[in-house]
Length: 380
Image 1 (cartoon, helix red, strand yellow):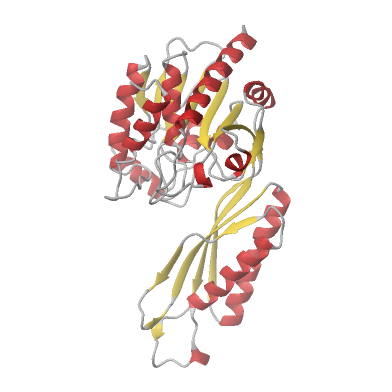
Image 2 (cartoon, rainbow, N blue to C red):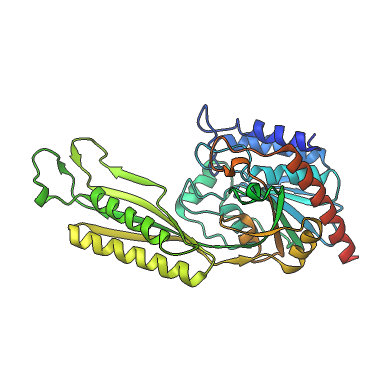
């Protein structure tokens, strides 16, 4: 049973072995290893006294029959990025189960947050709040898993949502602090961009007659980096590049890229994204290639619930904003939400070297327990 900080860490490391790729942790939306995660966590949730079900987008939900007002929900996500660490997302779910041994709360593991499989993030939490729009690809993945996309989940609204998550950055370690309360999650935008040129022989096509999609993409990527460096607080990333035909002796004819833009100011984020996309169009025109642009996701800065932040700060003290997106930013549209960050040793995340300190997990358990007690008292 998952009760202690050591139990939590051991469980997270074991769940990291449920993967699509031998030798490294990769677990995307409704991939085969998600069944193993569901089975393992179902057993632990029942041991904590929770009634368990898997909804039709693959969220795992554990309900306590004794969870009366305020109805408290603790959770995070089950999926990972490719070659992930053992704690991003899943730590928050396992911590919720540990706290369910102490308090009558509900626990949820969202099936998808990272956006790896379809480029669309937060499938699980958007289904929870009732705002998920299914694409044909997502619907087919749900059917392939044996679930029914025609019957999306309908949850009774909770009074409180709490999410525990590793910081995924170096700030807490630089301050020698184990924990912090998240006050806001900054805005982000995700775009899919395609440069369409013309594939041709690398040896017989003169440089002056080429429509090289990769050369256009490379020029644009450098502009993305320079633009972000010139604007304080802006981060912009091209994290995925797919080249076709991807052969050493063929001029690249098509390049698909991802763009991720984030800033605490919604207007600055919007302006930067628009500027970068206009630059892409100008580069394409000058180089004789075409562009296709699709906006995948746009999320404004989301503030966490003031009352919950104040309650958690009573116990922790330190506050910070989050540069990474989290399920809490989605759930906050419907349920008062708050987050707690745990220190990331070395500031490492989205990497197999990701880790946590056992003493930080123990501290987070105590903070969570105390916060639940304070919330119960405030509703008494």
